[in-house]
Amino acid sequence: MQSSVTGRPARCEFRSAVLHRNGHGYGHGHGPGPWPVPVVGRAWFTRGVRSIELLLDPASDAVVRTAWTALVDADLPSLGRHPSPSNAPHVTLAAGPELPVPTGFAAPVPTDVQLGGLLLFPAGPGRSVLVRAVVVDAALAAFHEAVHAVAPGGLETSLPGSWSPHVTLARRVRDEDLPRAIAALRTAPLPDSLGVAGVRHWDGETRAITPVG
Image (tube, rainbow, N blue to C red; front, side, top):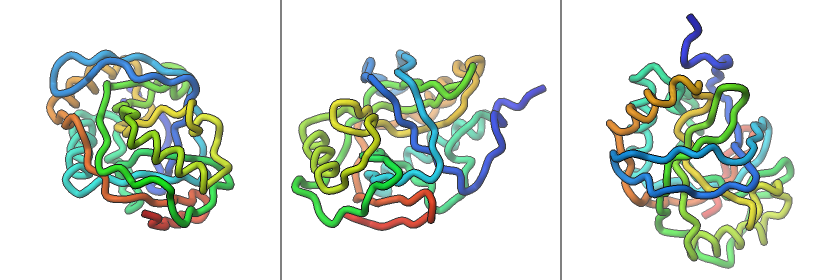
């Protein structure tokens, strides 16, 4: 029997940016109640890409990791299976192969982000990336614009107008395992908002992490 976890060999240092086109937020998805789970746009998985990311504060980081653990405990794919120190819950703001390290931003870093519904991004035949959407409010939109103003070179799908921010929970979940994944996540519901601790630049080629805000 094929494991529900091993869609492809796991690598401790594996990191992919999930970028998609024409994404939208659906539903509310707060708490343990029923969640709509739309499949959104197209997805690309890239290695060696650079990215600029919002990091979560310790309490919010811990609560997302609890959701990751709930998926692991259910014998499902989960970001909690990747032990690399760089594998932290985050929201990608920009991604691209030549993305520079920014030196400052014209807008303040948001103090928190609001969560939307549970979403699926395509991840190959019969598999999906499972994420929680992040609502683009005025503060987040302004900061996202400021990031791209000082760090040009982002892929089209990470640019303002095409960007669908999210917090990733699991990659390559099989279609038949989605009901179990949703049930597992109901045992570890996320709050309506997550606190932000700062910003980092990630270089997927060199594995270098640079705090930038």
